[in-house]
Length: 572
Ligand code: SF4
Image (cartoon, rainbow, N blue to C red; front, side, top):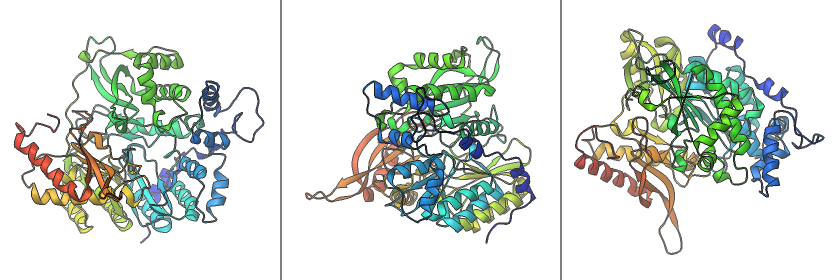
């Protein structure tokens, strides 16, 4: 049944500024951008990109195909043509598939002959009526379900070509946008899921995540980077937000006396995380006031825009500029853009970060507000039906604070639940076929879309993840610590297999002399995050998917047999 909107929604929407008109209005095609007459010097919001492309070509470089597509027709200029062509029901050409991603739509054939829409949800937090409204849109235009992603976001699939634009229009009605959620743009802004309700946090990340979200969606010069870009805010709370896997991570820290700056809560800047390329973000030594995060992130990105590789898509992330230059040179360029020096603090003058809890996203946890709780609901590798979504929205409205908080662990929290109502929420969640409790293996089970919906996948990651969990629950009953098992379908590493205790990356396994293949995985162990950030080490190549549950069991038994105590991680 469709959800009815109420006065609460109307109040929210009155104050909502989605910035779409602003982006298009400030956009006039700059010189060299395609059809406009070309003055000698590029101007306008695309100029920074065009100049970088021109420098690449002048230096003898050959622009990547995607750079040529951006230059031939900026995706924002092409919007109305894309609508018209999609309305014919035809699949988009490759260059238009790339351009549509600026608007949040991904053509995912041959896995599914349809669009997937990836939203933007700053800090992962939705109002109950937005959650229900997305369910209605998924029914009207998509496949009747959605997935929670590893960037605390939602994806809706099976959107027919002619339904793409109506789906995007529907998001506007909900005060949401999908703008810039794909292609070479700054992705969904993540923040601590327990922001504002966590007794341990140093800082509420919600205003920072929202402010940065609005900053980037309203400035066309911040679209069309050399490659995608991730930014995350960690408030120092109990739940990891995986900022170390982002290009830019801001970590709330407590700076002590004698550091050379005023003691108190600052944001530490970490740079260069990209786990699929086996790198985690590292401390730059820079600390900044929370109010300065936007300006500093903006300067970091503009240095990247001007200097990132536009010829080789495998080397075009910011990490490779950092590798070539080193942190000192990169930060000097950032300071030049800002017109001022950044503050630096010796780590010896920073209080240690309080420990995170790997189970904080599952089950019942006390909020900092007396008598209130957050309840983590487990989703089978991130999937929910639209009926479940509407019912969950009702539970949030009737029993909680009306907010649904998505996490990077592919699940969500219902927040603001009074002590007296916890049992009712758990029972209502169970009646939907979901649970608020998870075994050690299921709490840390993460899987990307896999070959059921992504053309890059070598294997059915979500299906195999559930088989691994079933097998481990049945065979390793003595497992008494949370374990992260991450399955990713290809080198894009959306499920971040390198930071799992056990990580699996899809691989085709040759099973005959004729070259026949079956689905399988390469397996890594010993990755980590938050308190123990580490890139895992590959131990097996090309393991058939049917053998993976047994291999995971072997690794877990080995760990249990040799550990010195429950505190010992897989990395030891
Ligand atoms: Fe697709 Fe690869 Fe991302 Fe999995 S990791 S969703 S297969 S792009």
